[in-house]
Amino acid sequence: CISRPARASEVLVKAGRRDKEYGLHNSQAKRRTSHSMSAKREGADLPEAAQKRSCRAAKMKYVVVTGGIMSGLGKGITASSIAVLLQGCGWKVSMIKIDPYLNVDAGTMSPFEHGETFVLDDGGETDLDLGNYERFLDISLGADNNITTGKVYQGVIERERKGEYLGKTVQVVPHITNYIGDWIERVATSPVKSGTNPEDEGHEADVCVIELGGTVGDIESMPFIEALRQLQYRIGPDNMFIVQVTLVPTMSDEQKTKPTQHAVKELRSAGFAPDMICCRCERELSEEGRKKLGLFCQTSADCIVSVHDVTEIYKVPLMLKAQNVAEIISARLKMYLPKGMPSIQPWEQLCRRIDGLTQIVKIVLVGKYTAGTDAYLSVQKALQHAAIAVNRKLVIDWVLSEDLEDQASEEVRTKAYKALADCNGILVPGGFGERGIVGMVRTCKFARESKKPFLGICLGMQVAVIEAAQNILGWKDAESEEHNKAAKNPVIILMPEGSKTHLGGTMRLGTRRTILKDDKCITAKLYQGSHVDERHRHRYEVNPKKVAELSKTGLKFVGMDETGQRMEIVELDATVHPFYVAAQFHPEFKSRVMCPAPLFVGLLQASTGQLPSSTSEGPQSPRKRSVSGAAR
Image (cartoon, rainbow, N blue to C red; front, side, top):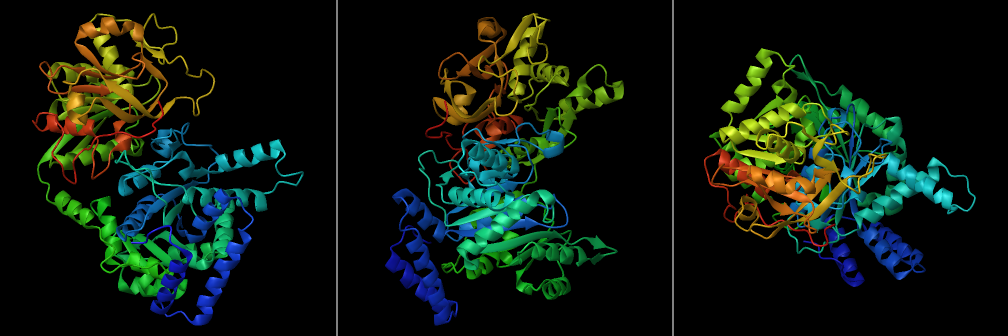
């Protein structure tokens, strides 16, 4: 394991040993030492803080993952799996996602088009790939780990308006590219915190894995590719490793390599030569295909990696390990690889455990965006993590909430209700807008009356409150202001600080503390504590003026914010329902495969006939959730 920071003398001694190990000639070693010394001289006049950052940046190694041919090939999973292997070598790893779209962030993008918006601890609304990074590496990232064209241009234009460019003509090169390069180096050298250990103060990374979204050759990607090319030139080729993810389709039972050849040609024309080509294919890439790609792409056959279809994404790190990916990267970047590394034993145990699951648990997910399941990606993963923890194989039955409403045909409605009746548990996730709300309210009524284990998230909590008001209190006009601005009896209202004119970045976002008012409640048993720190994304809340009346329905508001005015968690008592819990926050965003979200574990326990409680310590056990310095 590399320890940081090391003294200059120690670095030179280790570098000399590595030079001999990798067979470098004295002239090569001298050039590298000369480059390091000149960099040190150039930084001599910088302020102390800048010198420290410059020193860390000089040590940083980068792995850049690009895509060719088409999007949606799995660059995010490939990048995350490479990062797992590097982490398994004992190195500290950070990750950055570059999205070339003009949106400032993913907060206002359609879930049908873009998938879910993943929320970070600091409130950043980002691409769903950052969720993969956090789940695979068990780290906590920030909004700056997601770079978009919108953020870059916004920052450069703001500088120009302040006069920081001193009258110069502001151009894509060098101003945009320099801004991107500076952003990458700043974020890469920032401390990375653990995702599940609240006492971790963060660590400096040894390696930063960067995923460039989209496809090489796209117009919107060009400034980022140029910025990365300039960064490689500035830090030296031994500090950046280029991976290209491409498609090798199968036609007439033959694997076609021509698309990959063209993708590599496009990457070379942009100024990059791939050090490794990861080939997405249905079945393992043939030896003939490796040799052919190695010859025509001028890449060693050992660096042509097969990333073929597997039953679980958690097997991808094992697949890459079997093809010596970590060894290839460490040799190319001249990083010392300890004997016996990479060690990813927990992943190997996890995959064996998943393969051994035979008993099925069926969860119905009733939502608004079921046509594209990426809209609920984190919810899917959190359910799977919890299912593994209770030793069950998960089956999700997707139900469009509108199928439970009167305008749906009798056949469609009957099928939807049958799915509710046949399942082991029900989940109603978050969402926005009026469409499908009646179906969600009916789902809550069905779960409450039939004693089906139920978990509501964000909007799911709000519709659970609406259902109780309408069907238990008899308030037929109980509504949400989101769905009816002129509601006569609003049990859900716009938060006082909410914006009525702007949508982007104006919600209640990020990790916030919830105080548990009842230490005997289900949530307290699952979290084993008096408070909960989870991530939020909402602009509507339960009307505090209605809480006293709503409590007469049997709903217990067991969790509130620190002011005691904002309702966060609602439950039915365990004596009247096996598991009926809803939360305003999004517990799925902090779920990890080795550390599942407690509320999801509770749902799966109840769905398999177990009493909801925190499970024993182990690799798939939920731990206490708390984030130091969380936004309040």
